[in-house]
Image (cartoon, rainbow, N blue to C red; front, side, top):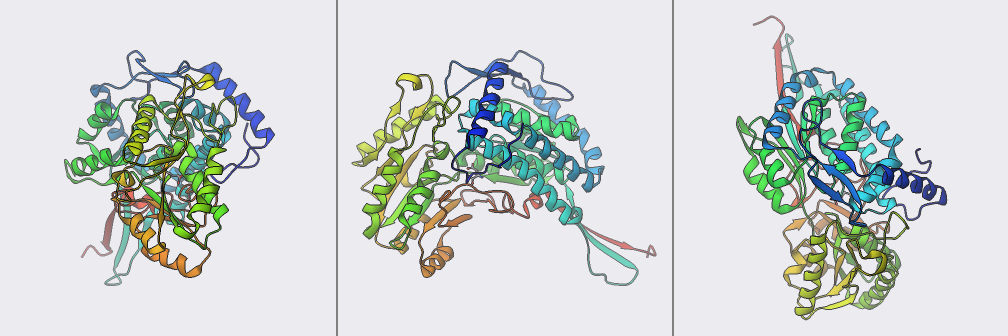
Length: 526
Ligand code: UN1
């Protein structure tokens, strides 16, 4: 059943009808779990027993999926199938490929509650965040298909040297792309990269995060059902270290699209660019340490809401999360009080049974990392203004729950200011003025997103011209640094956050997956 009022990342509350529908979807999913998954190599799942169990971060006694991971031989076969499928898939008209991808979008939209319910169990998102992500996935497919159509499949007549000659620029696919996606947006980030590759006529071998294989399979199901041949979209499960590496090592892989940590992304950039037949295109979207600046001229209530939503939404497990806030001294105290009030009121709990603002972290190691950072802040003379505790009592004992945390470090140069934690830990810092805030915001290797709260036109201008980030927002109450949407907020990192190239969610994203051929044809054969 699909939802009448569409949910996006700006939605704040669910109406009772949505809750009731979602409850039913959760119940159905609970009955079907654990789902057995084997990816798809050739026409069917990989051989072998499902040896990898995906447990829900909400309650680890609940097994969400049993997954058969691909062996190196199966990865090789998957690449082989996608390689053989390439000539047929690229030979389809661009209009047909766009039609198939649009159809997949409608299939995703038609099953939105079911897909979102699986995602709640699989990665622990809240209902609203999961639903928004499913809607974003459908919109991504629609938007990229529309961009292909608006550009007429990227064939453009050019000027001619002589009347007998016709000249054209044609953008063409490369071949097989490896698409590797992370757990935190297991549907949308995969949908974007896969659609980018497929629409241009490339084929794909897709490896979803091992923490989130269900969302990956459901996405592929929609694409296959819409008419993407199974061999043109192969699906292999496994870890980055085994399956990911095997994929990248295969010389028939013509391009790599990766979203995930900077550590892995940079390894891919270094290692994968050199392909068997020349440089390989590599599209990488990596980490962030995103700052928000709040000046004395800000609407402090809007700022507190925007920062809290971006810092703590999905437990800070977004590359776009706000993890540093720099506040002008004269309003620092008042802003902090408002932010603390909001943060203390943030409900943490099981998103499948209730409607908390925050669910669990993805896995045990994230909780361990949270403990280490909290201890590190204390041992550096820092102060935990709120949070800092692991929530493992009562109903929360079987999941990975932690309290949203605001911390202050006396040393403004502390390495934590440049360390992507992927946790609900926000570092709070006073600054003299906007100039100092921008200097601090820019003083990290990353440059993904950034935010400003100020009502002053000159300050806005000053910020827009100096901030070093690919995605910037001013006065965004619904999310100071997060919540990019297809066709609205192109999403690409600067500096260590991404590779140069047209941004995801933006009008030119498909260009990443295409190479140009210039065609000059002389009518008289001369
Ligand atoms: C990511 O955080 O990994 O802006 C990507 C957002 C999302 C994209 C985030 N649409 O929050």
